[in-house]
Amino acid sequence: MNSQIDWPEPIVRVQSLSDSGLPVIPDRYVKPPTERPAISSDGSDVNIPIIDLQDLLYGDDTILAQISEACREWGFFQILNHGISPQLLDRVREVWREFFHLPVEIKQSYANSPKTYEGYGSRLGVEKGAILDWSDYYFLHLLPLKLKDYNKWPALPADARQVIDEYGKEVVKLCGRLMKILSINLGLGEDILQNAFGGENIGACLRVNYYPKCPQPDLTLGLSSHSDPGGMTLLLPDNQVPGLQVRKGNNWITVKPARHAFIVNIGDQIQ
Picture 1 (cartoon, rainbow, N blue to C red):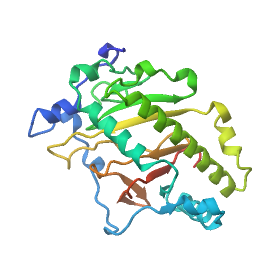
Picture 2 (cartoon, one colour):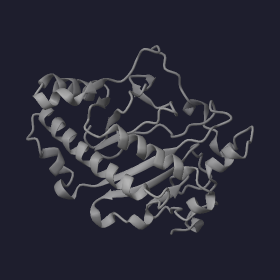
Picture 3 (cartoon, rainbow, N blue to C red):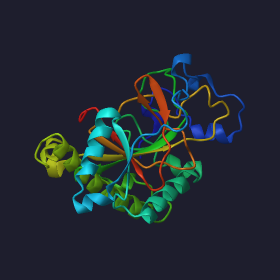
């Protein structure tokens, strides 16, 4: 596996900082005042749209209209009855939770480098002295198949690779369904967007973020504000770790995840 020597400075695992019981976070993780966590000013009842896909099976065009409005007004929405079993969603979350609680020497065998970022990581970018996010992560490729390397996937827990593979295939199929819906809503042929992103050779990757407990959560962020550069992101939230916010106008809205729902984020390219 890749070693840490490719990084501009030694890698510190945020989980190890959290587990050490330190009362104050290191300066490297303290965000400037303008970038610190924001509280929604729109009230606690505001949420991104929640759309039930079940009625699509019966040709209900109102679902297409709901998705179209959500894309135009928000760029985000949640989907229910999307076709991926709740049992698989629960197990893939548990697989990753178990991985991040493995002994550090096991996780270190999957340490990534800035050459591909694939594997177990704790920072993005190679700028020396950069302000870092309070999170660890795991990044891997699902598609194209020539980039899919099971040796870079965690072998523990015992069913990890099987569960992650099944989950990845199901999510890719779901993204294909959503691409068709977006194409239709744009007045295009249903395969236009999928083909624009490579057709059968479309790219897909998986990133799992782990947010350890933080002693000063008002000073840092698990993941800095950003827009996703690809076409579409499907986010499977962890109900044990709330905190995802999306921007609408000048306000940051805290998302309230629905059980077994995916959060769909329209990426820069489709936007």
